[in-house]
Length: 413
Image 1 (cartoon, one colour):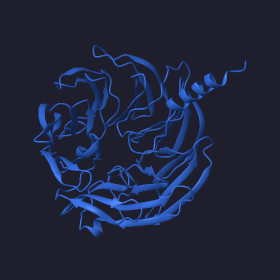
Image 2 (image 1 turned 60 degrees about the vertical axis):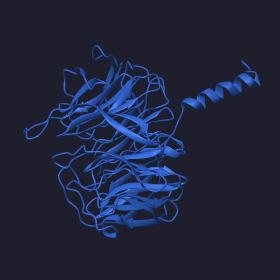
Image 3 (image 1 turned 180 degrees about the vertical axis):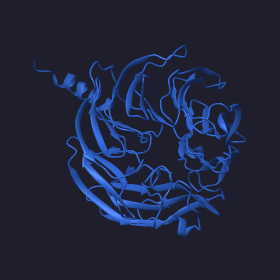
Image 4 (image 1 turned 90 degrees about the vertical axis):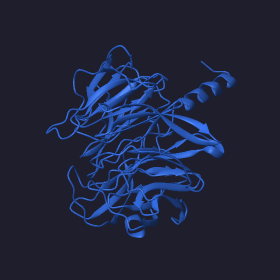
């Protein structure tokens, strides 16, 4: 059948509108939301390709037909960035660099996820090395030792903030005195601005709003902070302080609400508004039982948010459970009866408001969100144990465990 040109153009436009790269932590809008639909599968998802990868919990990102990964070089105090062809898994380039010696519990590879923007790949290593690479060839453009430059101290589990690239700047939570949050010029690596004295957390910043009142929100060791994106001036602060200094969860916006959590504090809901012509936030609720280790919550609609809790210390063992929460009140509508991991499970929302859950043990689950009950649509074992968040891009799901990166074809994508 020969399609009329206008109809063919419309079909192609619709196809491209639903296919999207996944160029940074939590996807194109940094909120864990995909523009693609995923249908329930009757058979395990098809493996398109798999490739070995070094140690790390850094998530894969996808941009311009390439998958980028940040990993530790085996048996060396080095980190590397790999670029793979997104369709075939073929290695396109690999660039390594030395780092300071570092050892911790739960792995010694990079934890922060790269960001791709303007033909560059930006990575933040476990020892605080912020590096810019040419995305096409892998050449190192610039590198800043942030801990040395700003007299910062590394965290117990290593630096973990995933870079935020915005308006020609790269933002990370460094944690130095006068340099808690630092914005670097994306082209040169020079400091554009720096702000606050807060120590660093394991969390990553997000953008909230648009225009002259746009703000960057970050969870530091001392709490939630909101800064103006153009110079780092403080808009507001909320004292969410974790007793173990292990704040790791990325704050999430749902309409006019902001949700944040840590393992000893629990979760808090803030209402975002404007006061005296400036962005402001006021507490709506606080639930000490909703204790997130490092899984980022996923809003579905305006009324519910789904999050994964761990067991609050000093318990000797932990169980991660999925909960459905009322966004405006913090009320726990239900927890899933079975655990989804020991500490973690990743949550990703599809275009048709389904939830993809990658459990810690490597089980991929499609969930039909329902405030009344847990409704599972499909399940399959897809990888080994993982803490890395998956990337859903252009009809493929990219996973990373401690041994390899895997490309899957899902029904409906």
